[in-house]
Amino acid sequence: MEFDELLNLPPYSLDREEKGQLLGERLEELTELHRENCREYGRVLDLLQDGFFQRSDGGSAPEGSRNGTRPAKRPWDCPFLPVRLFKDMELKSVPDEEVFKTMTSSGTTGQQVSKIYLDRETSSRQQKTLVKIVKDFTGSARMPMLVIDSPSVIKDRRMFSARGAGILGFSIFASDRKYALHEDMSLDLEGILAFLEKHRGERILLFGFTFMIWQHFYLELAKHPGKVDLSQGILIHGGGWKKLQKEKVAPETFRKELEKVCGISRIHDYYGMVEQTGCIYMECEEGHLHASIFSDVIARKKEDFSICPFGEEGIIQVVSAIPESYPGHSILTEDMGIILGEDDCPCGRLGKYFQITGRIKHAEVRGCSDTYEQK
Image (cartoon, rainbow, N blue to C red; front, side):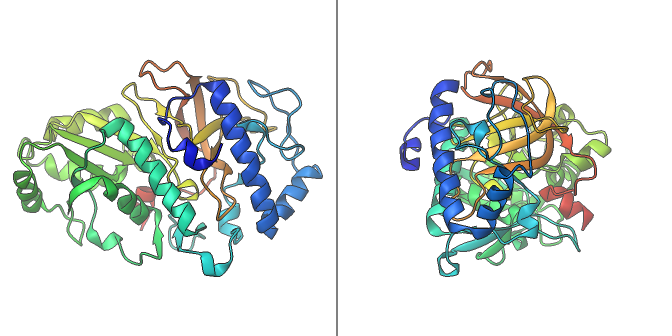
């Protein structure tokens, strides 16, 4: 199936067998495309095939499938790249003149950052995929959008960070847009009130990064409880849990406190990364992160990279049907997580659902808002 055909399907409509076959075929095509067009990726695959990395698959994977030793037939068969390679190598599968924009991951001062090279087609597919996924949670109508950030984050449109990319990506859902913070990151309370008055009676979409919402939005609103009414709002947020966990702020506390100060109850976390922009994993009404038909998530054991059974914590591998301009279709992240189930979430969406439990020990802190806080 061509990628554009996937875009015609509802994002959580395929069961394990249907999705496994279609996504596996797409990943196989992408593996060969990048092998032929990205010399560095081809060299990595040669190392994998020569046994530089060896693993045995368990869980729900077919017996005997190995990373890089045979063509991918299912998502878990696809050879994966450690996410850190995008910091250490220039990985692209298109000529320089076809690079439309370059996205960078978050990074504190002195850290290397990932550089992701996009051509126009890959960038367009990222946007279309994001729209399909998010509309399943917000509906198809555009809404006035309150961005919990400063306008200064949007600078060079050709090369910008994950934080800026997130704001630009979600802005497609906006009928009108207002930044909630001044340039110095202080709360623009009067501006927010004027924006809400302008759109009285309308649903409001809020977007931001988790730590920044807590630090610059919630803590300031807590000084004026009840002054801002967002009971008709929908908040989508991602990243930045590490800092909040240090401050003993759990996800449930985050949600309850926000509802207390501004009335918002529809709150969705999401998991995503600049290396696979577009294929985000949205949190459903049951509190579970979901893989759409455009992506899949696999938990692997630390000791041998075999697949963890459902319910067992492992290193998270993510696959995406989108990337054609760079070999980012199968990535081993530095995050730990648990696959909770597949095709049976009480919310009714098909596909795997999971939770992220933390970072691999000694991994760099990379979250968008965590990085902001360190700076």
